[in-house]
Image (cartoon, rainbow, N blue to C red):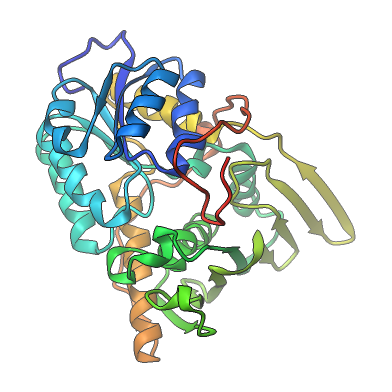
Length: 374
């Protein structure tokens, strides 16, 4: 811990960045995390500070200019900032002895990720990247199935993840160089899923981007399709898009059977599986749960028990290096080889944490990527 709290007490968090995800998912999650306390919020908008402070009974509401003061009053921060700000705010927190839970993607570049990891290690604080699906029963059940041999020798993974993003959303108003675009925002889920289902790291990637010429896609591509080669001659393909109908699914194919998860990556609904092995088809629906409360519970336990989190900074770096290779391939039209990556922990069923889901809260001055207000 940072030294501010005793091990038998709750971990006090500041949520930094109060956009749509923070308001509909992160702030409500503290109600389901008994070992975690929402102690402060940080926003550049006075109306958000005022209304959300009152809603959650928080007196400690701050602007970004007061971030150093915030760090003196909490044990951990949950960063829900634009991607290009992750490095700065994570490093500053670590240097102040404050633990860091950071939304994915971890950062924009490998150098950013490495700086965050180094700052955490140098200051003896925990760093976790918010891969909420690493604690979700349906997702972990898919990983178990991938490993127990019932699908046979795993051969292929395919996925589609898409939504319509409105023209004034930061996902398209900021350039790819700042971590915007569908690969950083949605492709990272597909990359992560292929990596944990295969239990390996990709060795090379080929990617193509497309753009239908709409004005909203002037700074980012409309969509990107990717092929990743894995050891043992396995292939993973995916397409992510900001200009297509909502879809969130993957299929894992082995020599004896296949598993389709649809939806696969959502937090507002339960995951559904369809497994086909030989002539037998089994469908299973997993109940909706609060995935954000689960990751808060897990991270706070890691802090209290001095354990290293599984979705660590290394996990975040592993995905970001693939994202960067994807954009390089799309730019050059060539395959990009990936250097060998060190072995790391993978998610297991032991990490499954259930917390009941909640309703959709009213939001303050924010909209979903599709432009809908809660």
